[in-house]
Image (cartoon, rainbow, N blue to C red; front, side, top):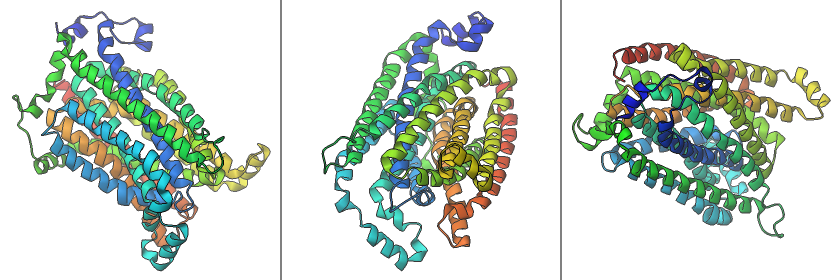
Length: 510
């Protein structure tokens, strides 16, 4: 008996179970391993996100202003190259081989960085004096010279950024969309986030602990280097665990006759009937001339630009409040823990939104939260006369207070992204054919995700040039308007996609 039959014949859940755990017993065999794969991917995403920021933002040769250059000139081109390569590889290798291979490459690099590259920074990086000399000699390249000045950090930052796009947004969710139907997705996807976001709590506290792991090392030993080695080993362990669970799902779970009917979506990719394989050029033409995919891309780009613009202002103040890499990373560890807790609470309270009120309601939550909390954050930034005395009364400096307020904004935005934005975005892919699910998703999540951040970075670079400055706070007032415009376009895209998604579901394609 197929899973579809089981699902359709199963009795309705009671109200309490429908609210807390709308999973049938026979579905646990697939549901729980999927949760754990996402758990370990998010675990690494959290640790890498915090560490990459600590390396760049807290380094005297870089700083928060360098983030926009990195995202625009390095991360974005890398994402485009990856998607071109991925489109080719999907026609050459199986889904399982791609997952194992890509995770292995990431893990190998992070180990290489911690054990080989970082201990030899004196040889690999130019001196701070040399970087400043070049910036003075070539003012037109002020944006890119610091990126080169800390090039191993830039490489670490780029691979860490790609981990989130490639492993979570692309490989995990593509796999989920292949084996999970729309009726299951309404129940599964929010709970994936609920279970997996426990990893943010563990990763945040582990990150904080490992950031201080080198405090008591002998004199002459770099404490941050010791912390990096422990961090890389934790990342490697989580990567291996994700590979093992993914292999178990494919080798054991999906061989179960109840689930086999759901694995046939890869037939077109393998040439076993259905649509033939498309070449890279044909694939991108097919993708970018499809309005449905275009609307999904606008959601991703809108989120990326708005969050990137707000974050650069927040991290600039965070650097002032926490000056060393270890202190910065420790703060980000607590931030990740609070993000995990907030996300889990949001999922618990909002996971029934799509089921009760429809796709649109779940999709519009994140842009609404972004514009409200972002507006409040910028009000705090520009209201130094008001918040300065408040900070003093609380026994802290204004940058520290702004760091906490920015953290709260970021936690709420990311919490609604994980609890509402990601599940609704992924549901939008389910009614599509195998070609768009695979290569369309790669273009949207890898290129679209990076394009969002690169777009925010481009805006910052333009403002830096117009204002003849590299100071983030000088351009901050103009970034407020950018956020308002982008979130407005993002909300409009939600309206447009909702019409098309509803029409596809009504046709009974899934």
